[in-house]
View 1 (cartoon, rainbow, N blue to C red):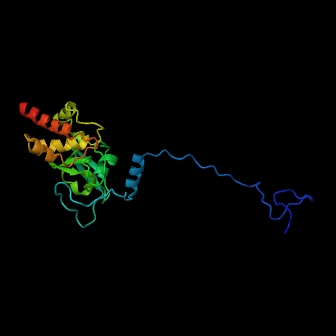
View 2 (view 1 turned 90 degrees about the vertical axis):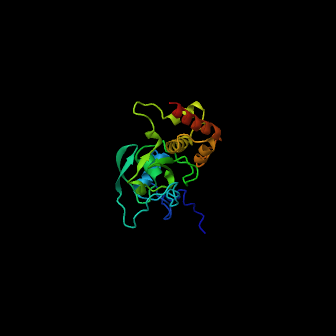
View 3 (view 1 turned 45 degrees about the vertical axis):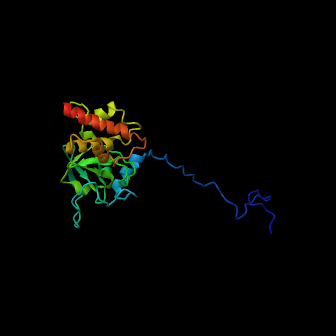
Length: 230
């Protein structure tokens, strides 16, 4: 076995055949990484047509909607959202929550559990509450959709339910509040003078991680009373 170190110069000035020549080595410096955010990532995923795990559910909504046709669906569709006609490119398996938040910019609709359990994404579709995270956008093309952004009056005044929730200190962390508001608005439109038990039942589909249920119920009853007095 040779005693010559391949990384040490040889006495006669020659270079061992197996020595490494680094003179032509090219060092590749990686470019700076792009700035990413969770919202930009999801927008990119939706635009590329990749299905996000947990984003599509085919379970029943809180009120029945028409089933999708077995035929291929049109991606560029028209939605009636908060009284406005909105044209949007929608994937066949895209949920309404994704469309509202990441394509129409209506971020008041919150994504909590993303599996139709917590109610943070509740919207009103043709007078009935629905979990938008488990409602396919393609199914609501012929319906009127109302989100939390659509409750404000033209002159900027809050909806009576929103004001009542503030007065009763309903919101704590506030993440569930948009869904709570939408459920309360739908209740009072269907039943302007509910009992507390009826209100509790109507609001039972909205979970509050802060446990502020009585505050929200107080807000519902206050809004109902003020509507009667007004």
